[in-house]
Length: 299
Image (cartoon, rainbow, N blue to C red; front, side, top):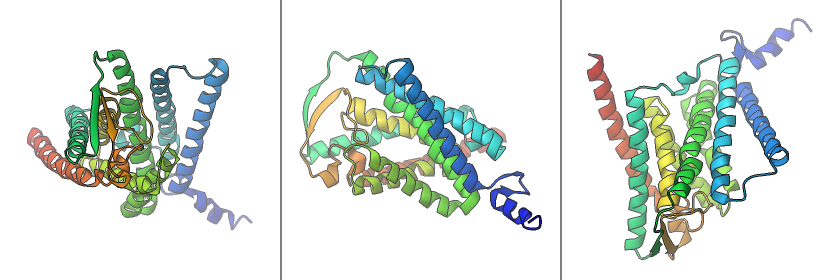
């Protein structure tokens, strides 16, 4: 038995790196994240009598709680399982990082704006009204609940911890493929989801991965994610992954579901494909300019 024990130990740990193997680290991280979310849910239900009745406030609160649980789970897993710093995931704070964040945010706003104008031009969206005067408090809560918080925690988890540990265990190509499919599959649990929406969201997952590949930081992907959700829902009035909310623009979608995305949102329709390709091109140009700028500063 003693002779066999070292071989069994190798299944669980990497002796050279003195840490668990990538698969076990991923499993432990998922369990930690799920446990933290379960604890928070119990505390909210029995300690505070459940979520706020106001839908907008509840969305913002949920976003903040997911940021707390995801960040804590990543921190604990990164430090004690990966034995690396959280900043090595792509969280270095610098001038270029903030530029990435803002560029990604407004690029997504442009992309959603193009979708909106294209659908109007095709006669598949009928403008109805503008929410005026603007409820700035509600808009701010939605920016927090569907934009900033989701952009942070989903990118930290999917393009940060999961993708990069998959890369260490299986290599980059397999990591990208599995990460994209997992991202699409999880969104099948959302309201009004379809197989097409899952496949297209997997494609959009690569858009976010591309941001990390070109900059080796998560800020560009985080900015794009936050901007996509915020402009898609609270500004232009589309559903965000099957969930509707207050929006500045009100409209009716009349075009075919497989193109417009209908009640799930534009990411569930083929209208998103050319827009995502446009986004990839713009990110490529931005990354090239960014590299030249950083190189110039280092001289």
